[in-house]
Length: 140
Image (cartoon, rainbow, N blue to C red; front, side):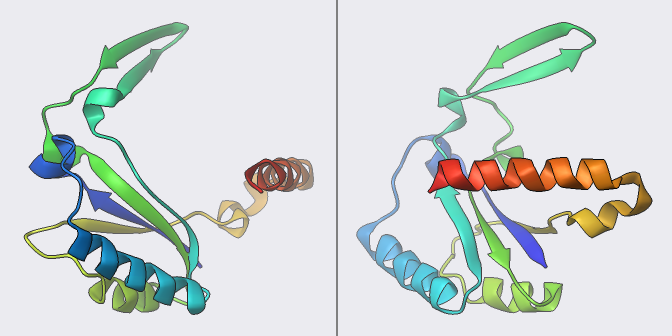
């Protein structure tokens, strides 16, 4: 089972305040644990919303709103993608994360092809596998 761990933004991350050396050291050790345990698939931090945009789709129309965005509690500062045996295992890993100070994390299962059932035809499954293989080549 794959899960996405979403690190919510706060006023500091939105202001571009970088983590302290102590926090980077603790997070580096935590990330190494995740890798050694075979849990970590991907991770990254995100720049503040001031450097981003939102695009709204309405038929053929595309409406762009430049950041920054005011609702910090709805923004993300970073993410992990983990491979775990169960949602409970993901919760146990998350409890060990070196966050404090009111950091909020969202944990969500990632859809697997099996979740789509019969709607995912053999042709669509083959296409999905081909696209993922090509993306993996680009990532390496």
